[in-house]
Length: 157
Image (tube, rainbow, N blue to C red; front, top):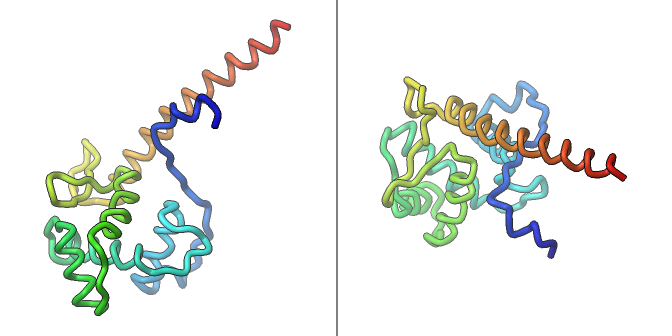
């Protein structure tokens, strides 16, 4: 392992995907597209557990207008899909979404992490645009500075 590996604070991944009109025809297609584009699943994903967690979370946030707990999500998955899922696995998938900064956990409840200037406090779109741009812009500055220093170090020879 290279010494600088311990400096990694996190990662963010955005995949460039085509968005044909057919994707917008169903919630399920949109959910899969978003999960794939945000790097929450791999392009060869065959399991649907992550989708079930996201579907249950969004059901509570946007249909029921409540902030769910892991147990709420677990209950919804069992009720809707007749499937037992461990709290640990549910938290794993929720933590992957939290890493994107668009969802946050406060205590035991999950909610949208709103953009500070957003009037619509539950807007995933505004949350994503703000938090992703903030992290991306900060990293672009860091990488730009490092590239400049690196080039200068080679030019001195």
